[in-house]
Length: 69
Image (tube, rainbow, N blue to C red; front, top):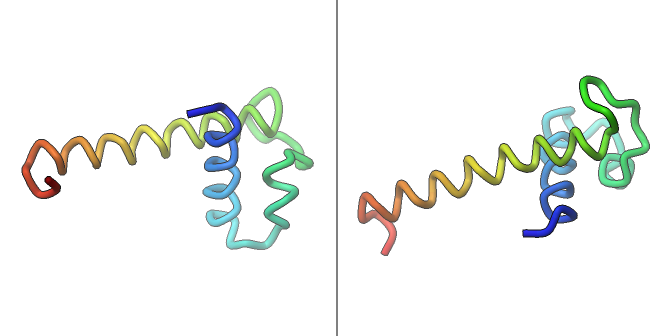
């Protein structure tokens, strides 16, 4: 996965968690003030990485349990 896809995933998750009160394009472009990271795009990268890791872990668990073949 490229960093752009991971950052977009983080921006989308952040937008959903905010209740869609901001513009999605502002979230993706990082036009907001960072809360806990260096830049807003870096925060989106971290959030996207965590979400992608959780998603891949669930897929691996389902494959190993034989639920998905």
